[in-house]
Image 1 (tube, one colour):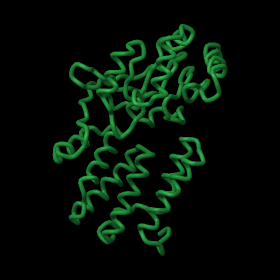
Image 2 (cartoon, one colour; image 1 turned 180 degrees about the vertical axis):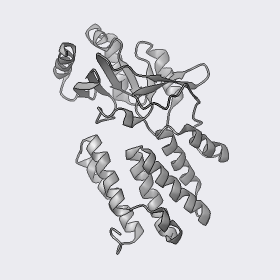
Image 3 (cartoon, helix red, strand yellow; image 1 turned 90 degrees about the vertical axis):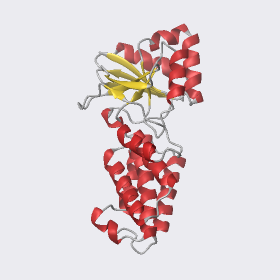
Image 4 (cartoon, one colour; image 1 turned 120 degrees about the vertical axis):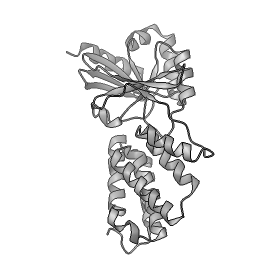
Length: 280
């Protein structure tokens, strides 16, 4: 086993240091996520067969490490490992309320809402959101969004048509850069014309913040935010920081602009939009 001579706590600290370093050195987001998961797999190789023989300290550190990796991966494989470690902690009687909150949050991030609500129902006093019902969800793997319905706080599943030229905006109402962007877009006709018909998506995360999403949609009906369903359904995207603007032509990225004001300036933004409009 990797670092078998080191204590679990030392390996966990090594993983946390590695995560911090990848953020500080500004490793591109998609690459950073893969690197952190690979480092987790190296330091904490998972085996269901070894769970019963692991010490309490090993289980505790492995649970924390798997949660960290799952936070960046947001996939079902890492989610199942977090859950396995949680069950082992529960069987030992060394689980905490914070552990259940972490599990709940990973279920929300991976859109496993039924599982998230099972924990919420079992531990109603813990600080956890109630995940809304999803109407019309299809098992087909395709880019899709979950559209809020403010009347009953449900989400409606909608496939996203990427044929032709489509502008997809990754944004969130709790991101002040996103708020600055929508303000500028609303006030500047040249920008408003570029964003007409754009698809606005809140990226996956451990919290939905549905009231804030609904308030954004009330304030900005021309730029309604929906939730991204599965992040892996959007393989053409390599960054999820808000705001990020993807100019797509038939599902392929023609240009990408990050931040607001745009990291490379407004001239670069307009040039990106022009390349997108000229795409065939």
